[in-house]
Length: 55
Image (cartoon, rainbow, N blue to C red):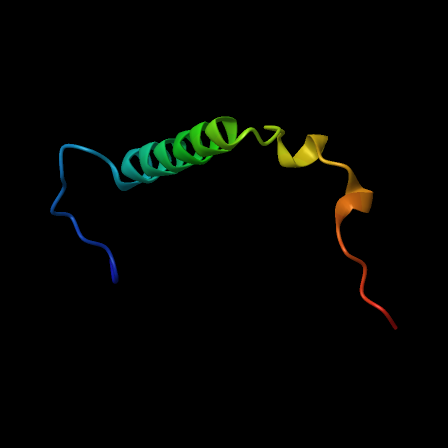
């Protein structure tokens, strides 16, 4: 088994990553709320709000 480490930790790497991403998202959401910005998921944002590249 090449490239694998069997020295385990009590918390799986995926769980730590998920927790870190959740904390990051919560902090961004809280900052947006405090700034008075609308909070929307990426799927709820209007696609026309992005700048379009000129050709």
